[in-house]
Length: 309
Image 1 (cartoon, rainbow, N blue to C red):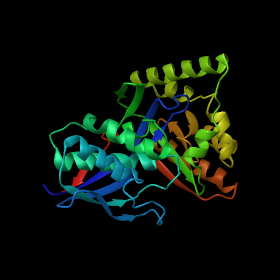
Image 2: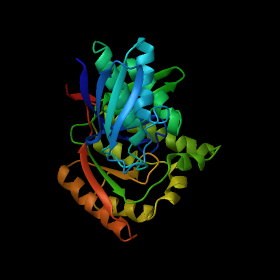
Image 3: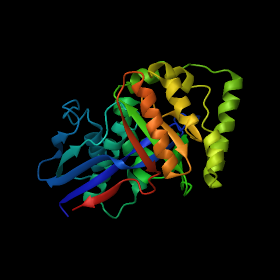
């Protein structure tokens, strides 16, 4: 096999109170990457589409090529690889755009040069690539790679736990035509938090995990409550409060910022309700003068996958 095409899905990180320790993968949206072996040493980016020319083709600055290079160096590959990346995600949308690219590059390199390896082989390479552009966190790359809900139990050493999604759980994601820089969103985070807020978030993270394990959508919904990160980041999103209210008034079980924003997500227990929620959230953004993209999705249980050879 000298050529391969892979798909790496979008993800929602934090999931309310689970800052940097929780995320889930989305269906149907993500990055597509084609990798081809080359006789020349190293990784080269042949072409990038879907990014409006914003992403660098410098292999040391693009997460897809950084991830691929890291895997090839670990495997001791002497040859090279050329990649073509199609971005299916908006940049700075809060849906793990850079993480999806990191996973696509690393996963493609593994499947091209060491197809017998399991996905876990490239997890640290994905985190390394993501860290090069937006900080050392795995709550985007791990869901994109493995699918489902993912808990980051520890970063040193890196230890993740994967959970299957409840069968009736739907995610509504609305992305306004507006950008929030991940670096900016991290720069405004508090350096210390009150004990009361810590207790609040700890209880909700525990309940959120319990709700997923128990297949209980209602518990999941009422556990999407963050008193530490979201109140700060909400200021970066025009119409945050009205969008959240619109979601809850339309029957959402819970609603929060997706990653660092500006996308917002909501959980519900039916596809019909998820569509109604998406329309209400989009109208709330429209009242702020912002058009938006809407997505209704089950949690993607597969993660990165090969879609062509």
